[in-house]
Amino acid sequence: MNPTSHADHDKRGAVLSGTAASDFTLKFGGPPRWIVAAPGRVNLIGDHTDYSGGLVLPMAIQRYAVIAAAPAPAGSGRRLRLHSAAVNESVDIPLEGTPGAGEPSWANYARGVVAGFLARGHVLPALDALVVSDVPLGGGLSSSAAFEVAVATLLETALGQPLGLVEKAQLCREAEHEYARVPCGIMDQLISVVGNDSGALLIDCHSGQTRPVPFADPGMSLLIANSEVRHSLGTGAYAVRRADCIEAARTLGVPELGQAVLAQVEAAQPRLGALLHRRARHVVTENERARAAAQAFEDGDWRTAGALMYQSHRSLRDDFEVSSPELDTLVELARDIGEDGGVFGARMTGGGFGGCTVTLVATDRAGAIGQRLAEGYQRRHQRALTWFVARPSRGAHVLQG
Ligand code: GLA
Image (cartoon, rainbow, N blue to C red; front, side):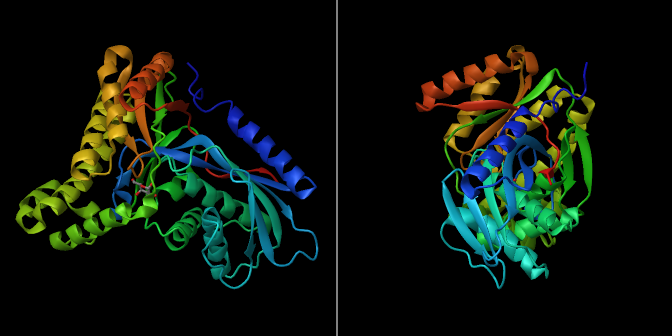
């Protein structure tokens, strides 16, 4: 058995990097000096816990935002010209003062990262840059964090001055808060920075401590099923959930909900009221599930890991109310296939309100499982499913330069 078989042959990354280089050359009339990549992620368990100082278990995946860039020609002015291959549109982001958020909105992530560098006193060189990405947009796989972290990696590289890893993740999170108006936790940006290609990382979002949780058994795989129903965390539901958690923590008298335990939540039910009680119950039980699942993944105890994934989905659906009918269908279909068909567990992943599920499967059954999910999904929702097997990736890196 080859323990690195999940991570090897990052062919997609190589192809994407080639695309970024040739698109850059076409657009700007010369080759890029730098090429950088930052991965998306799948969260195995521990959702809607990060902003309450809880535990999360994300894995960076071999889906990337890749940026090719070069110094701008002399006389171009102090700006980053950024071209998005996805929408075939360019923006100029000023490299002095404070860049304002605005249209086109896809560029706000980059404006926010530039603003973070400027606020920290960095003097940025004028650049031409082009971004390509194969992280599905709005799919709960951190397409926006990958983009932010790729921009930060480019700026570090162009400056020749790396930031600290945690500082870099925090800067990118500030961009998400202030420029995309999503009050997210640290999970997505941190795993995109510090991911490793041997598997997942258990992150304690209160202390910042991390522990690698290898996912290296070639007999097991993580299948991502994309409901193709897009969510928008900016629509407000995410912020409302976060506010609920702050309110519940205040009622319980703890600084963050991640520090509460179930007995406390149950005892406070009359004071919390039904809704905050359910929200709090999700966070404290999800924390325990994340802790137990990390151990199960480490031990190769797939049955336990899978059972915890199903429980997590139920909690996100019923107590935290961030699932969607499509995600529920995908989890039910996986469950119906069951262990005999190679499925050990499934759950929605990420912020929810659409997006993707993650299913723990036997590698030799992955193709058949993906197909059965797609057929069932088409029957139930008259929609096409896209699915793929996720492989662990290292965190953001420089491919050229
Ligand atoms: C989004 C946020 C993360 C996290 C997840 C839910 O991905 O960006 O910080 O809160 O939702 O776990």
